[in-house]
Length: 488
Image 1: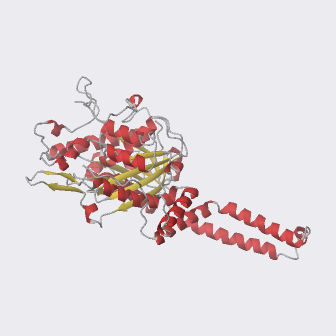
Image 2: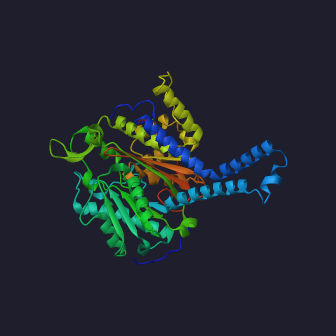
Image 3: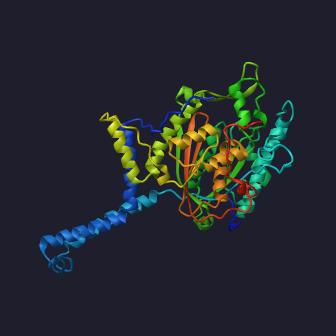
């Protein structure tokens, strides 16, 4: 693994709706998003448009004034009006470009990431034992979820991921300027971010943040926070740590909707190293393209669909509402309507706009048009929250089996690792050797509140399959066929 040069410094469920027709609050919203897309394309092709304009202008003048126009006017020192006209136009273009690039945010690069790999277990036991990791306190009957056990799980998953990341990159703890930790339900004092700073003896001026209660989409929220911090802190390195500690959250009651998390969730963690240092771009794997966040918390049903609460017997657990899938679908509709204007080609945006206007304004009898996101995105990392979620997202976004292979295999191999699942999925794609320069990756996360968040990365270089990591010793076994029903 290539290491980077470092510089130290001080300072169950209802059905989802059949289609994912993007939810647009008003015609003004549609117009705004199309305008943003048009602005982006004009800026990206400004030089081409300028050359076309100059060529067309000269051609029109030559036709109007005859063949001797160039010699009499363009090349004449006595009539410089046309030349001054062109110079004025160029000055306007240069001013526009200057304003655009001055307002352009600093790039954010993803140098590398590392995912927690469960400790090796004997292969003589049941087939599922070596694959899925439960913390030691939950191996007892009844479970023994103590604070000490919760801290031990925290240290195991986070410190092993951090150690792997530092080894892969060559970055030292003293090089870290920003630490962001997200963990939904376990929030000790001192905080988990303080545990990390103490363990690795980081600098006293390191900026630390500890996010809690934000569910399975919290990793992408942490990426957004890191992006905003890196905008205002030049020449900085940021580490994002995404995990969910399940020791204190095992439900021992009898309510079915609160028993589901016991089956789905398993130990997991991801440590992600970000930077805005242009000198490290050549070592980076990805650049951050877009972050789109959607929060439906204003709606009561969305707010209460995933709740940490006690049952009637006083047993603490996480309750999942029967309408969770429908709420997730509505959140995704809103999210992709915004993301589509940023990533989809103009042809797809135009077709969608005409379809929307035809149905809403002219009441035409036609099916909602679902944009083909595969035309803009090569790899998809859908949160591995459950098989039904992956199935419905695949059918609604018209994705192929290969597009959701990483999500399915992550769920099969590691279970639902909460917010870190999208990183296990990206690790799967890398381990398969499929990540190539120029590819774009779409990470989709769902979380309590209710939230749907998207992050799009662009691959900077061809990425070789890593020799170490969560998938390294088992990637040759995947993909596997996962049956609908398993006989026990």
